[in-house]
Each structure stands twice: as structure tokens, then as C-alpha cells.
Length: 367
Ligand SMILES: *Cc1c(COP(=O)(O)O)cnc(C)c1O
Picture 1 (cartoon, rainbow, N blue to C red):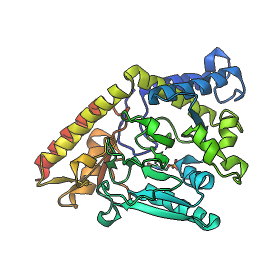
Picture 2 (cartoon, rainbow, N blue to C red; picture 1 turned 90 degrees about the horizontal axis):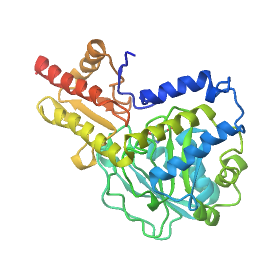
Picture 3 (cartoon, helix red, strand yellow; picture 1 turned 135 degrees about the horizontal axis):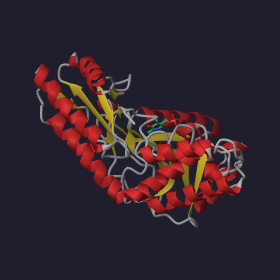
């Protein structure tokens, strides 16, 4: 198979073995003579896929199935921006604003706050420097209903590593869409974690939500419409309505793939190695390239954002990379420009090495 060097931010690269298993299941799922797309979501074979995906997810997170529940929902991560305040906003919630996705979550929070006569407090923001850093000072509300953070800022290329703030007794909620399972984290710190699958764990069409059940039971509002109520979904084992069966299958295979790589420790080590190759290449020619992130500590392992010191070279860089080496999707997000290489878990190291080589080659040809 002749694979492109795909640097797409999402939907993004998936592991080839997962693509192959999916291709097989699309034609003949478990030798049933039916496609995975043709079987009932209530069929035993599909139920096994769902149950295994949930169990593997908790295993990878080192969380117990007694405490946490995993749901696979539609509506994208964007629907979670609404579901979270709809279920958990009573009086006041804190949000940390680290980019476009945080801002969208804050907007939904504020819209719900108007309806519930509640308040949204932005406890920290890196808006003042166009989101090129992760804040270190917070103005938390001691009795907030929850704190919401975005662990990786896909557009700006910043990421929270082991510097997640201590929210004391206030429940922590995280949008991990673009760095889900990119590194080991203390997942037990969180009351709710969600991730649109299409960045790092699967295809578009499914969002994973991991929820602390007791907290949800005790804290959720009771006036939530059925489909937006988390309880509807965890009480019905994520099968209240037809789940996105095919995307759930791909996610389940991706979890197996992660385990086969050696779990999150191995994945993290590999991601750190890959990101370092790329950042080192950018840092090697400071007269020509510059990282878009102010402090190296905040550099994302997943989305490497950089600029040419002379921005006129950027379109040329992107076009030449595509033309000569079939490197796709290197253009930065339309709201910030520049160059962005998204290098998720399954982005092969050879793809990174090819880009490193091109960074050097382009520098030498144009300096
Ligand atoms: C892509 C992205 C989203 C939006 O996801 P959808 O599934 O398209 O709604 C939200 N948050 C982050 C961090 C993202 O990268």
C-alpha cells in the first residue's frame, strides 16, 4: 500500500492493521456472512465489540468499572460542550480558555448559564498572547460545580502535560479530543473525560465519554432532556439508541492496537521521541523557522505548529512538501495560518523522518 505522509489534524491517520481489520469486518464481520454495517447493534457479536471497547478503555486508563462508565455517543465533542453544562451546571462553573475549542465550550456554558440563571467564570486564559502558552495562574471558584479544561489545543499546538492544576474538591472535566491516549495521565483525577474519536482513537462519528458514576448520580440535574442526559446512556449501557456501530468497532480495534504497542507508557515514549525529532529540526534553523509555541514546556506532542521567519515561504513549503514527497495537510488552521504537522499516535516515525529531512532540504534551498 502506498500511504501518503498524512499530517491531517482530524479526521487523521489510523494504524494500518486497524484499517485492515475494519476492511475485513466491512465485508464479513466475524464470519457471519454480514457486514459490521449490516448487523443489529443488539446482536451478540456487536455487543461484544461494545463491551470490549469499554473494558479496554478503562484498562488503558487504569480506572475501575465500578467507579467509571464509558459511553460512545454521537454529536461529536461539540455536543459535549452543551451536555456538560446541561447536566452539571447549577450555580457556577470554571473554564480555562486555551484556544478555539475551549472558547466554544465556554460559549455553550454561557448559553446554558443564562437559562439556568448560573455563572461561568473563566479561571485562566492565554487569549492575551493568541493562545501560544498554557496558563500557570488560576482564579478558581472554591465551590464551583466543575472546572473544564482542554488538554491539547489542536489549532495552536499547546498541551497540558503533568501540569494539570489541582482543583481540590472541585470536579475536573477535560476535553481530550486531540490527545486521548497520547500519554499516561492520572485519569482518576477526572470526573468526566471526553474525546471526539477522529483525532487519535478512531474515525469521525463517535465521541467517547468516560464518567464517574457516583458523581454523576449525585450531581446531575434532573431536568435534562432524554438524549442529552448522561444517565440515559450509562443506564442503557450506551445502547439507548443505535450507537455508531462502525466507528465503535474501529475505536475498539485501535484500543487493542494501543495495548499491542505496550500500552500508554510505550505510546508516550514513542510520541515524545517523534515530537523531539520534529521540534529539534525546527529549532536547528532559528533564522528560518520558529515554533509557534512560546515555551518549549507547552509544546504539543500531537500538533506541531511552526512558522517561517519570512511567512512568504510558508505556502511554498506546504506546496513543495506535497508535490515532492506526498506530504498532506501541512497547512496551519485557517484561523492562525503557518504550518502544522499533526503527528498522532499512529503517525509512523518514517513519516516524521521524511518531514525532518524536508525541513532541512527546504532550509538549504531557500536560506
Ligand atoms: C476537533 C476538536 C473538537 C471538535 O470535535 P467535533 O467532534 O468535530 O465536535 C473539540 N475539541 C478539541 C480539542 C478538538 O481538537
